[in-house]
Length: 257
Image 1: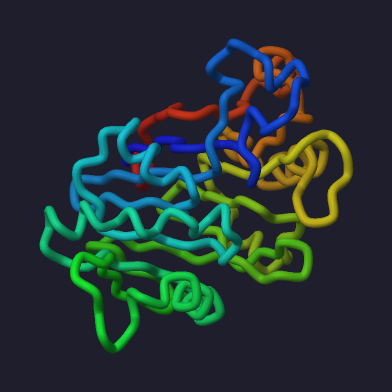
Image 2 (image 1 turned 90 degrees about the horizontal axis):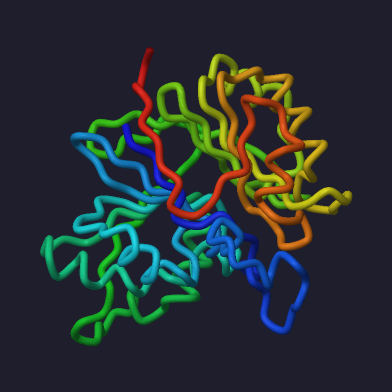
């Protein structure tokens, strides 16, 4: 299984419009972050987790030629705003894209893209098949995915475990029962907004505490704000098995070791 970070930034991305901080003015490409999303590729399936406003650019940059599905963590704009751009995949495959989301998120998608689900459909609109996520295992082209219920302040959202890989973003609380689903993960991706306390996201210390508790072989931090600081500086502060993710970072992992 190949994992590629399509975007590792917050809802505003990095650089932030109007900001002239050192991070936003950095000429290091690792400090240039599109909105958070990840591409997962196996022999049988190619899919993304979340499709925010940079989705088109991310697909072009990563050279994605086929897409089987989109998994949505939640309905915030930086996670669903790019879904109109599934159209080229529809045209190429002549099939709708499978979209996996819980019922509340599906309703948000239907509101945002009402023309997709209208009774009278305009020619050329995106084609999506909605599939409901609950606490049951998800099947994407035979690949088994475990939903993990986490919280984005008071909003219940989902993370996902695929074999020995777990992906969590936009969280600030993981119930103990859900941590059991993460136990044994070899590779953990988790959000770390910045160093200060935040109402709805893990900060750096909180993310590191979760990593110590789960004890994966490696962990990657994502959903990073410009206020975190420069990649080159923050990476020096992290434990040797923890990495500040950056756009287009990729690695391979055996599904089950």
